[in-house]
Length: 109
Length: 116
Image (cartoon, rainbow over all chains, first blue to last red; front, side, top):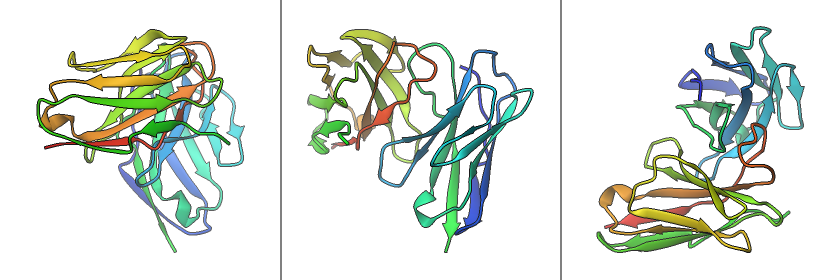
């Protein structure tokens, strides 16, 4: 699976938007970009995924660069409950999710 | 909505003992995955099953084995436990063809295994 690079940590203020970047310069044409998050003391949780076009769901938006070498997860209004480790994962062949280091998001009240 | 169920939630064992972790996927989900998360580490894939057959394998020690049963629940059997096996073990399930690039995985709450 291709590798992703994310900042180790980010901070945000409550009710402000958060942009979590991910670089994946070696992405292949058939790799899907998945985002999962892990809240403290819980199992990982699916957030969103996309292939080429930007995607929106009730949790977040995913903006994918035109060359697909980077993407950004957007939380439109961060809440304290969004404090978690966010993982950007490229999913190619096989079942598994390959978790990298992820970005630890802290949300200030 | 029904979620992935894991049992037990906590387990304490001595070195060289055996442990069995159980996972009950979301109803109608046909694929089960096992992940291990050591203290302060990120989850690492161990093994997965689709329709009761092993579909993918990661860094699972030879001391560990797993299977998926006819009702789709799965068990992870761990023998000759070592101190380094102390970790959170997550089970996840999904619906769809094995190897799908887009199948969302739903994770359980995890089993915390402590080896003394």
